[in-house]
Image 1 (cartoon, rainbow, N blue to C red):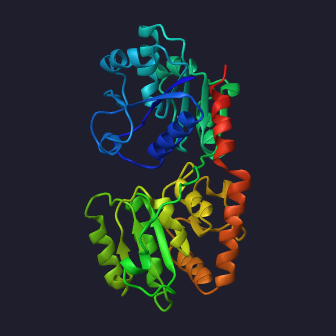
Image 2: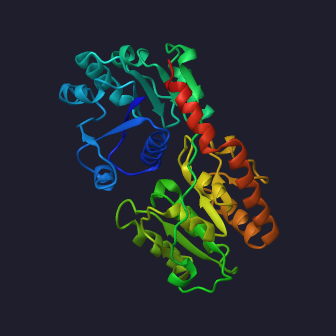
Image 3: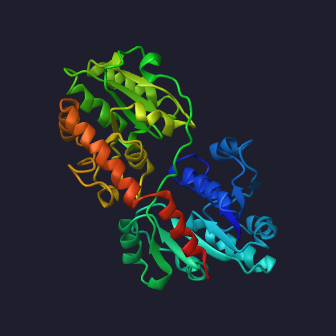
Length: 357
């Protein structure tokens, strides 16, 4: 099949990594994949030199110019996979302009009960399939959008592909800590909404224990690390909080962690970070305010805590920092569950089924 993947945003995050991983996997299966990205921002910068892509000014509102630029891209496509509902009208207009017979599939990467504006419903009704990355996301959207035929909607939980073996630096050595010191790791965009300050203040309550905290990802805003360092200083742990920065090999770094923490304080549709820890066999602590309970069973494949609750997060950290056997058991159980129920092979098969006629 000829498949067009359209990147949703300007900022690199989980949805953008999802698109790139999916495109590479489809190419490896023998499909002809092309990509569309917006002209400015971290996404286009990140992709330069990695893959070929077409720049189209797709925003959250209909753009006739974008539709005209998209038309030759989608003309011969069998499938156009969109990852932002706001881009659907322009894609449908491009389909009409080009005479394309492509099936348009939308993946909704968020979990919100947001009504689709009436003027967009015509374009949305033409979708071949609408994929939700969690049952939560599907329930919330369908609760206020009953006009979409249920048979067009399906849930395909996120997954992540196996990472190729890669040599990575020793994190204990880089941050100057003894190799027996447990590394606690956060991955992803380092920002307030991801619960980073909550995590730092929870760590302040377990400063009597041995550990080193590493944030792996880009700070948003760029100087947010200064706020976290100040919070760490207030808690007396400034020398135990480190910032690695962005890495395109984060999945290769993860196995060095003893504990992975995903403490988001906003509702997550189906975040990749907890899955990355589970895939790597690392004990995960995550917030329970989104779809995380759909794939993390508290006390069996990880630990779940209420969002933005410093005391609860500190208690969970203390539990696994002081119980090595439990930490190892949770990590191994999480990896076993990921392999049996969330493999990238099963995810890819579900996506290909959604593409089919």
